[in-house]
Image (cartoon, rainbow, N blue to C red; front, top):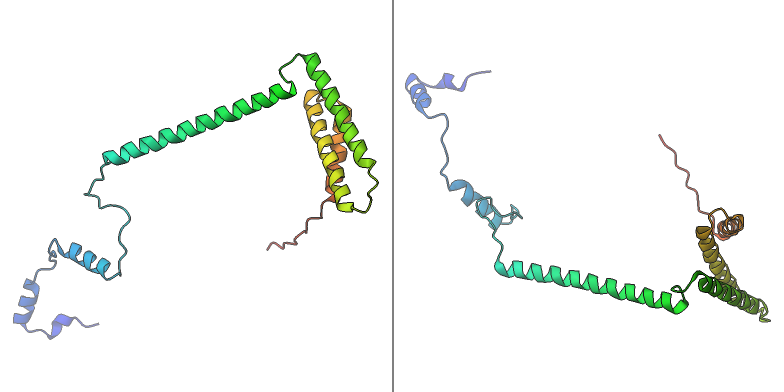
Amino acid sequence: MTDPHDDLSPAERRAFEALPRMSEPPAALEDRTVALLQARGVLAVPLRPVAGARRRWQPAWLVGALAASLALFATGFATGQYLGARSATIAAAIGFGGSLAQRTEHVERTGSQYVQAVAALMQSRDTSDAPARERATQAALDALGAAAQEVARLAPDDPLAAAVLRGLTERRRATQAPVAQRAVVWY
């Protein structure tokens, strides 16, 4: 490999070596270049503000943010009060506020009504409407399952409630469409 200075005369070599090795570009050159590239669409406009420019919160933004947060809090509080009052009203309407004897009587009464409703469904002579009969059967089983879950919560060791829940779970599995199995080969 040859040196490019070999072809130079001694005067040219001295002039070449007298040149400064590094020179600093003007301070505004970078800013002008970035602005020109951004204007032409070659360089994206930064999403963050420049480090020197501090963003201050405007008083209008602070007031608006405070008003929005208070409105959100008040809405959540009012919704909670409404839902709490509604559930208390429902509980009072169905008799949850009475004594244990009153609640037991209420369970007996609604249980008898459930049995009568299921018996009325089964006494229906209309066998031509199979989808309606299936919906009625499913509604009766859903109510039975919900009652069995509550009995299991009331008496966790009760074998009858556990057997009913087990039977309903097995029936649900048997009536569901089988899930397609995917064969995956791992390498």
